[in-house]
Length: 123
Image 1 (cartoon, rainbow, N blue to C red):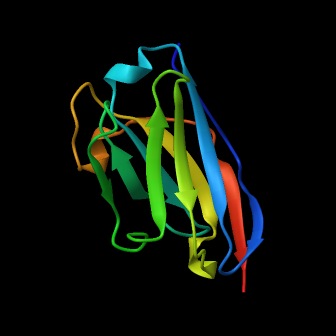
Image 2 (image 1 turned 30 degrees about the horizontal axis):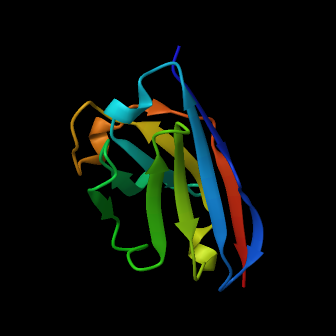
């Protein structure tokens, strides 16, 4: 079955960086678009970034544009999120999600989730 396992979360000071990874298995990873979401305590889950199956097309939420970079390695079945210039408002649980065999910027198209990894940014 589809498995998505996130890693790389942790605690960091504001202005610091973290790189999240998501190991995918149970499906043909290279044919699906992927995305990162996050959920802060008491808030709804929100889409952060998405990437096409080839990795050539990406999109970002305005709140992270210019600071976060989504990428993928289809040979390793792994999705990444490089997070720079972290702010306290980036504190959340981060989830990777599988999309469809086509690319869409609509985060509602990403419906299969991992368990998440916690990111805490202290100011």
